[in-house]
Image 1 (cartoon, rainbow, N blue to C red):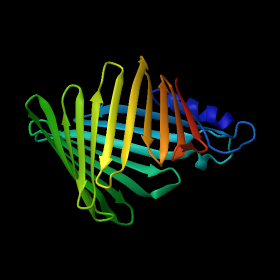
Image 2 (cartoon, one colour):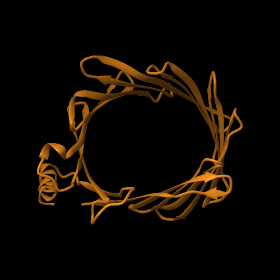
Image 3 (cartoon, helix red, strand yellow):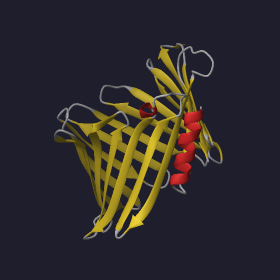
Image 4 (tube, rainbow, N blue to C red):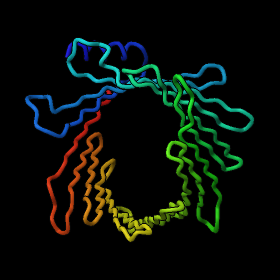
Length: 262
């Protein structure tokens, strides 16, 4: 772990931004501590003229003699205001492959209640992967947003309509082939339930229960498919996924993560 400690020291010295250590427990059978998958994330931000800049790195902290294998991803983000539009551009590269970068371009106009997003890839060629826009407005005390989405990679398109008031949210996702409706209802201060049904008759139900400050339990059941349970307790997050066949529950997959702020 000497290299991990050295990397942590370098990041801590480079900026006042504090690194965050996430420790995952991997699926499978491992000897010793090999089941642990620790990842170190660090980010920082600053202002330069009329530009807001931020940047960060995500790296593995497994013992290794190959420093080049440590970075998993490196990203940078720049934002500014242009004629009433808040414009941001974010680029992220794989720590092992610097020949390609994933780009996210966002433009938001609060006065028009409109936002636009484009996801692209830059490398030997520039290609646009996804484009979407969100228009919002108020309707009789409720908040309504309409989001048309275009995926240029597989030539698919759909539209998402959200209707939200204080305790109820209705989400409709529709394309030429599929339609899906989710109705999320806040039953009381600690319980929320959200059934989802699509045009094929497939049904799923999500139930969320707040357990206190920064703690919650969320269960999502898809009959004859799977039951997923997520437990959050401050810095701890546990996910348990269990395949379901009729009334039979198969072997469970468990993932546990712990975030440590320095």
